[in-house]
Image (cartoon, rainbow, N blue to C red; front, side):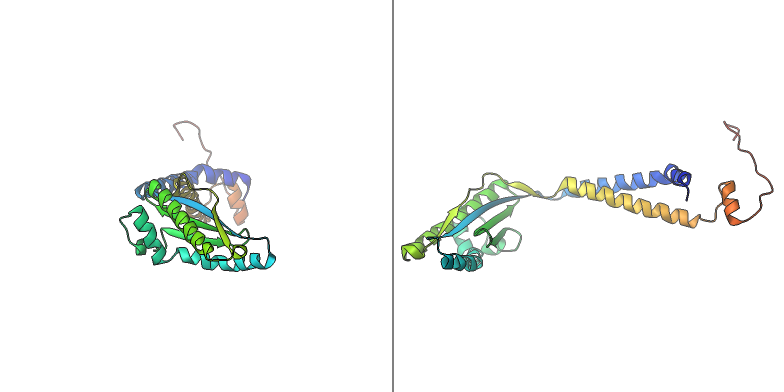
Amino acid sequence: MELKEYVRIIRCRGWIVVVLAILTAAAAYGFSKSQPTIYQAQVRLTVRPARADMGLSITVGSLLRSLAGDITTHRFMQKVIDRQQLDTTTDDLLNGKTVFVKDEAADFTIAITVRDPSDRVAVDVVNTIAALFKEERDQWNQLQDQRDRIDVEIRDQARTADVYSPKTRINVLAGGILGALVGILIVFAIEWLEVGVVRHAEDIDRLGIPALGAIPAESGWRR
């Protein structure tokens, strides 16, 4: 198509794209506002060998997953509940939506993340998990030779919690883009259905049909 055809399509059908984009963006905004706000707080633990020994460092790296797994146990979560006096169960904390633990062997750290509808609860629980885990490791170290100990340090306690969901801005943007794409598909479908409609003298020439005459278009209200 020539450039003027694209201009014509935008002028005649562009409103479809705009309206659908606005409607889907508004729907995404309404959906986001109807969802409960979930906050996320995180603490990182550093796991270090007691001495700078290559063999001990390799051992610590291989033990990180096991150490992280000690946190996600019902026994450990019950300690957290008792200390914080939470009105919940260990199953609620270990349901795959509340407490997340990830070991990162590259820098010998364990990342602990807690998500909760209350930002204060998320911060308190994640800090309690980190403190209890450090206490358990310190007690274990007391029974080991000083050269074989594995020290655990809290890099920095969580002080605030960020909004994890809903991501209103992202949802609205995604909704608008999706609506615009649907609108473009609809416009293409309409144009395809009207492919045989003659709008200009050039359309007749492309069809190979001789034009016998043309009705001039008048300007103003008489048109």
